[in-house]
Image (cartoon, rainbow, N blue to C red):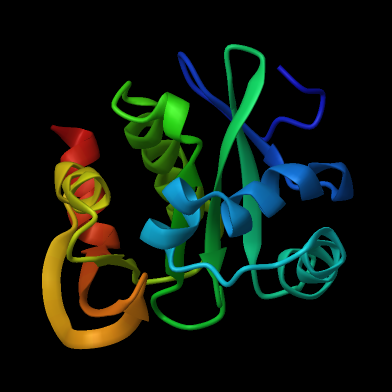
Length: 177
């Protein structure tokens, strides 16, 4: 566990993104297994460093590296913390998919957001074809709130974007069960 860990659970820990994490972030913007389901723009290392400076280090966002088994395995983030419902973004290296790390990390992160950010709820979006992401959100209690049909051009075709939401009171009810 890093000395900058802000959240930890049985198998994952979350810590702030550092500039040394540019290579991890760049993978999300170049590896088709991550970039396509995430909808990331293709960026080189210089552009990734600028992204860290402008977006991740911005005052209105919270971005954390997810670590497991002593390795960096992904990112969780909340965009636009000032509105009523910040946007949740996350991705994990493909070699860690299907092992429960994503669910554990996103759950820890949502708990952290509700404990530290004055917001009524959080929202997230996933492409219709990204069954793993949709299942993760539904498993954490998120409700499908809408669908933007053929809203994004991804990998050669237009795809639906599915929007999910989770209210603070819904999260708290699940935690007390």
